[in-house]
Length: 109
Image (cartoon, rainbow, N blue to C red; front, side):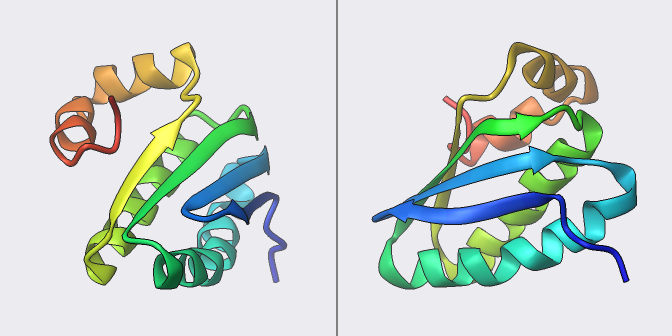
């Protein structure tokens, strides 16, 4: 069984902080572990922001997590935004063409 390396914590009303190192080996475990935390965050807030400043590396794995979390927010009828997206991750988002999806949903400003 894989152990999650990216931890998502509720740190305030409508605010979560992601920290750790995202890897291909733990991507599914990271997603599954965060799902429960996001469910709790969505219960208390219509809009949730995830601070990505504590995530080390990860590139496409972090992007995959971001999309998964956005999908979960939609399922709950909630809004989700991301803070502290690194310039490198933003370049990857633009390179993959996913900036349109993330911007149109208001997840990135």
